[in-house]
Length: 241
Image (cartoon, rainbow, N blue to C red; front, side, top):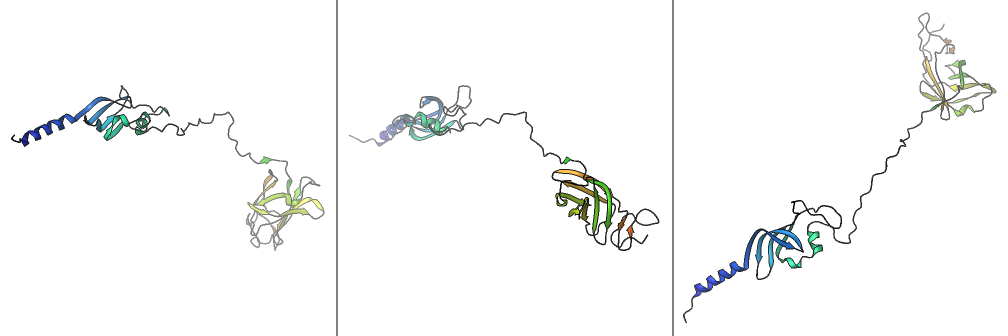
């Protein structure tokens, strides 16, 4: 019998065509879910080589059964794999869903709005004045100033008073045995008029201006306003009266 090799080649080609089916958007089931397949299907091995696009009928993405969120992608790729080996769990995992049993994040509800406003820092409370505004003595050379207290027998110590002169804090004490006076150090280079501010605890008690009248310098009292004498002067700046 004469061999005919060309017939073998033709039969092989025919079998190849029969075994490899090309598909485009073919309706198929993958793990029981309706999808469309594009690629090749081997009728001999039942293997797929291509892409399964799995969406809802309206074209929207499927919803993960475990989280209720939309899938992160809609395509599953099989490369010479049998669709029968894809389980339902693997189907959802390949679409980007969390595996079954994995801890699912729960949305934390925002805190309920309340009518309580955020408290602001309370302003410094005002209190009864400690100082009468009268200066009984002031000496630039010796560096002190005595303020007359409103109360002749105060219930506080001089160190309890926080007093500033031109925004410079100075030390104060009750003047000797005379509890009616608060004696404070003058800051170096002080000039007049000077702003006096006093607090005790958290309460502001006094805020006034002292013009320096009667404050003794090395040569005499510091006077202001008349005869060409400057209204602001420091140690040695003011001429004799």
